[in-house]
Image 1 (cartoon, rainbow, N blue to C red):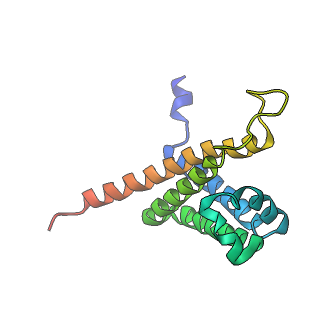
Image 2: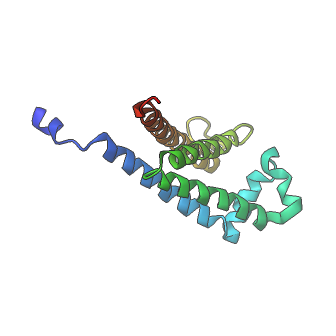
Length: 160
């Protein structure tokens, strides 16, 4: 057993794997927001949500989706930059957490359980939203990683 444990990859490898998988998610979902099918899909939920509802009369379905997509792509870029800059990683991680807290909050008041079956048979809305719990946890882990690295760097500086 010890030989197996001695060959495990480092935690740095695990953080890197988590980072790039979350960057991949933000890239795919962010790019999709620029497509009409995704803009319409997002509008069905977001246009009734106070955080986004005001945008629809101002810039329309596609414009609102483009704003959301730009935020998602920016978040992914900052999380990616966290591989080299803990400050960027901290900001990206916080933005990612905010993103997934917002999407998880859509579950309040939504029909989550498949009609005719009930709990635990989720409808498509629940399936779409509940995966964000693990993405929220992943962003929390990256945020904490960056925060600890920044604190360690600060503590390592000589006192003048």
